[in-house]
Length: 437
Image (cartoon, rainbow, N blue to C red; front, side):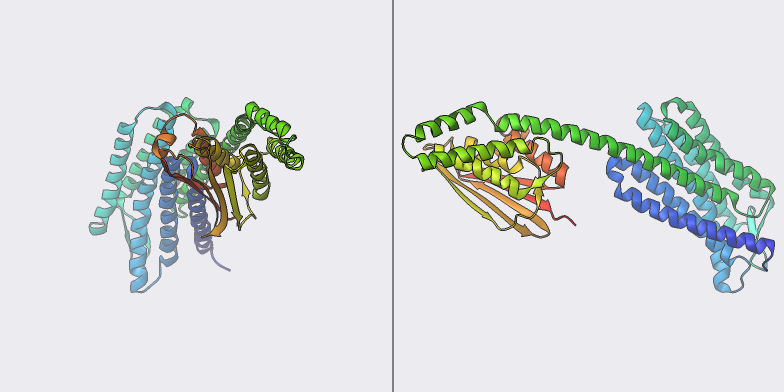
């Protein structure tokens, strides 16, 4: 059976090892979710990485303490140095993170607070580095065991000063933090400080390091809960935006004059070609049905469904403007989803503001799809009047549909849209939608 001190050492190594593992996992998680607040996420990553290095260093320091050999001799000295240095760096990175949190809430600079904090911690680091050459804080005996020297209290003093300065800062802006943030911040201060007091009177397990790890974990939990709230808010905004955008798009797509003109054309067409007019009426019905069916859609729709609605629209236009609009569809790839009205908006823009503005008002539209480099690619090409791309995306006007379509592609399916247009020549629009994993 192992004695008490040896068992305590093993337990501490296991706890700190798991703490370091958790820190690495936390860093990976935060890195994947940093879109919500890149600055805050970056600060938290530095905070957690500093603590993970501290934990790993202490594990090695404890594990090799009392071991013989040249390797153990240097490992113990280097890792103990890292423990004390990283302890102060954890405070510095914590100050940077919490200060950023406060500045975000109150919109004021607290640079002076940070400079004082950095000065205190830098003094602590300097004392530890001096101890390497002139031991007065701690040293090692012939059995490679760590022991304190009379000046050891300076390490605790400057560490406690750093913690107290952060506490004073937090209390000064306490009302500007949410309850969750207050809990996380105070836990990151109170646990290490309480452990530090105990450590002064009881040397053994590194209570300060363990409590600091607990505080870091609580801070990470606070960050992820805040991230979850932001994701939920973003999703609510997305749902509202999509709903409002679908209504707006439906209004823009189904113009009363378009329906009226199409019905008028079909009415007079009955006198000349009844079968062709009946097909045009069926196409108009398919166009209206397809447009109305996706009004309540909050997610992307099958491309084949969107393409079917577009075909109906083009067939109606071809009926109205016989021998003026020619369509070529080469859909090699159809097994994917696309935001509702995206393809429809691009095609209708090509007809209304491209081909119909020519003199004479005639031209070709090509719709091509294929798989390319892990993406579903859609090309919409017309030989209309073209336009200035930079001006179209900078100003309000008839091309606002292009800007909205690009935004919907990015928001709803991570897609992208590139526009090439030359006045007097025509327009090419290239859409890429990542394949679903």
